[in-house]
Length: 89
Image 1 (cartoon, rainbow, N blue to C red):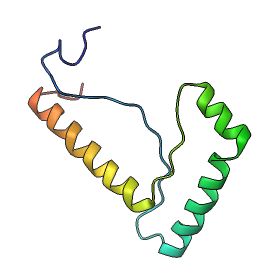
Image 2: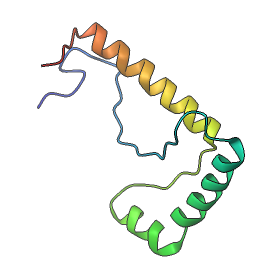
Image 3: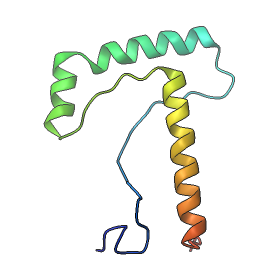
Image 4: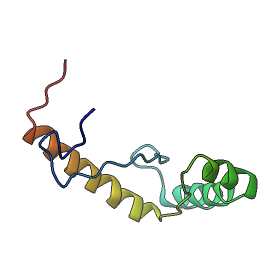
């Protein structure tokens, strides 16, 4: 399989990421509580060790930082799809 640069898409970096989403309109206090509890759970030694053992890392972005990251990923991949004229099959 060619790299993205070999496929004519230089400068594209692809990473695997996961995140937790809630429905639009979820009250801010609920988001804050969920965020706090998820950060606590992901940083529990047994959970964190399992994640690290897969070669991954645990980050604890704020909900706002994660939303900005998702927007940037969406914009980046939308451009790649347009520029490469990728169509659904």
